[in-house]
Image 1 (cartoon, rainbow, N blue to C red):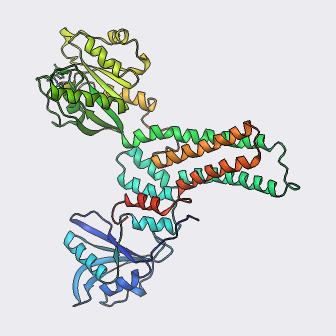
Image 2: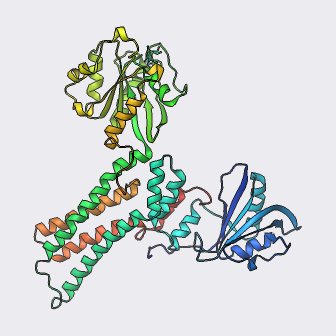
Image 3: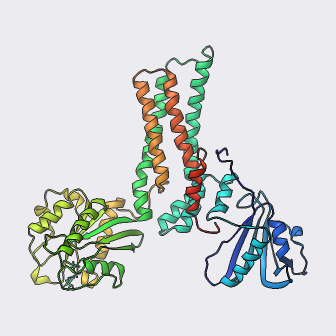
Amino acid sequence: MGNVLNKFNDDTITAIATAMSDAGIGIIRVSGSDAVTICDKIYISSKKKHDLPDHEPNTIKFGYIVDPADDKIIDEVMISFMKAPHSYTKEDVIEINSHGGMLVMNEIMNLLLNNGCRLAEPGEFTKRAFLNGRIDLTKAEAVMDIIGAQSRFALESSRGQLQGNIYKEVKSLRESIIYQMAFIESAIDDPENYDLTGYSEKLRQIVVPMIERIEMLIKSADEGKIRKDGIKTVIIGKPNAGKSSLLNALSGNERAIVTEIAGTTRDVIEETIRLDDIILNLIDTAGIRDTEDLIEKIGVDRAKEKIAEADLCLYILDSTKDIDDEDRQIMSLCENKNTIIILNKNDLKGNIKITSDMIVSEFSFVDIDKLPVVTASLLNGEGIDFLKNAITDLFFNGEIVPKQEIYITNLRHKRLLIEAVNSLKLVLSSIDNDLSEDFYTVDLTSAYTSLGEIIGEEIGDDLAEEIFSKFCMGK
Ligand code: GDP
């Protein structure tokens, strides 16, 4: 793999790879050309010998970590050795399985650091795996995503990415592009043997399906993002409609205070709720209403801003109250949003003033197919299942199980795919305008480069730094 990064240090690095908390076992990783020499200084086998260089690769052995200064035994450990290039980083890697206490692990770390290791930066092991050509950038990113996965979907899609599904896709697109670039170049250099007659139409037939494929991937990113990171959701409604009760019903805790005093939920509270595989990033608002109360006002303005940036509005109405102008005003704010209307307090049977039919006729200015109405009794937690179904219909075409093979869940990938598709569209317009073939090459090259950035074949030091610094320690 030919990425353009060549600045690389060959320090032997170490880090605690397991969580920083007292646990049964902790793993300390060491990677680099001096891994064996350094570890040998602080490790003796069960025969009480410094014989780590005799350790057969890919086996795990029992022994002791000792302080070389006084031979004091620090811990009983299992130690494994993976010889380059057959390791995570493609370097010599040693993993010390010690007891998982923070103090004992820190003592072992200090011995390693005092005997020639350098503390690894976050993500440095994976960065080395990438720089040494064991994995491409999408796989490196998948490692981080697997560790951080918050939902089954996120885990599934990062697993696919680690298996190389995005890498393969991008690689095959690049291969077709470079083939065309090479052909054009050969034809320009050697017109006797390569004929460009009718070539532009052939190229069109190659580029059009590519554009379609990339556009499909780009489209998957919106759904991929909300499946992975959650749906940004605002809860709106007049005071006392039941916003706090919804939040409570969803979160099952007393995060928001449920109260009968109008307008006490003044501040914006953010909370993430998991409804099975749906993640809602909830932004509770002060409620939207005209008010003279200054603090309320701040909340109202913020609420309006939040609606603008939300993916979903949950609009709660107290179904025992008539629809009024304020409701219409709120509804108009949600006009172009995915909105679910929740008719709350359905338990107060004798007093119901608003029905689903009334909503349909009242808010006829809204595309009614996009306006599910859910009746609920939030105080008793009733209606949450209907709400879940309505969200599934709106965002996932009714199917919570992902349908596509590949979802783009990484914004960096999406941005670069957009760049690539735009360049390919320029190729089409050059064809439309009968421009000469070397015009095609310019835009084909740009598309090729953008796609290369996705898999890390065209990235600079800064970008690699930025991507890997987001990793956790020991990875
Ligand atoms: P918010 O101001 O929109 O956050 O509304 P709250 O959630 O604080 O609810 C206002 C009042 O309505 C409280 O007294 C709740 O107990 C009551 N309430 C909320 N949901 C229901 C419901 O489903 N049925 C009944 N009967 N009362 C409810």
